Length: 319
Image (cartoon, rainbow, N blue to C red; front, side, top):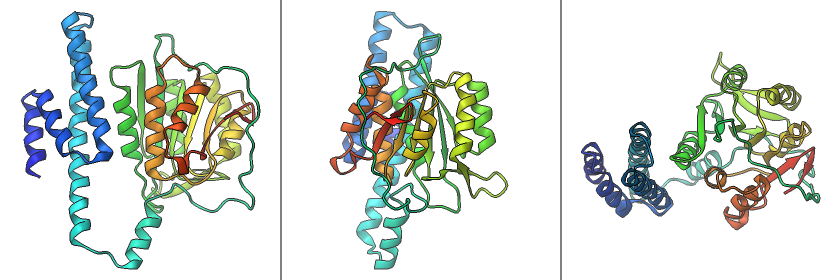
């Protein structure tokens, strides 16, 4: 689109303020908040430069992050606007519409056992601190999987928005896309993150990762997950976020290792998962206990889906 091309040209000319102003004018409502965040990050960078409180290296790094995020947002908005035009000029038949609604909404592979879930919240008076590394930052390993034989998920979009929320803040986001079991073990071993985040399909029996031989799904069962996170705890992992359907079962099992774990009690839509992740990591540096941060992020999800995220500790649901 001509508007997007002009905005990208402004970015190339280092006229970022003008580019973001133009981007805000054409952005769909779902993306306007992202533009506002970028404008806030840019204003913060400009302020810190004027005050002389950041090094040239830090300034260049923050500016590069904003530039990359703005270009990525241009691509996303261009795609959304194109889809809106396509919807106007084409009317899908009922079969196509039903398939689209089924394929693109939830991160669910199979139905849960009968009666699942029926899990009450147990009293918890403690406060769980946000885990941090020795440098004061929190490192997050963002692992995702969208196998080619399953419904495609917007996990790349989710990781991009989480990275966006981390810009200029005490968060280090390490992305591990197309995750298989061995790559997850290797990444945790080398990166030693404080938080491991997984986005993908799930069932009550495990998480669906990538089979590296076929690029199809392969189940990472609950008992294997507990063994892995028992080791990961020794590498410094102190929190787990499972953004996949029915992952409360894995959250319960992993939390028996005295690790706080976020899991989903029911199927979760892509849009809900993305918003929850964005808000969770935006709030993570707010100097509040982790359990309160979780509650705030959950409260920001739409009312119909607010009951899906759950927080577990020591094998009990605490929120």
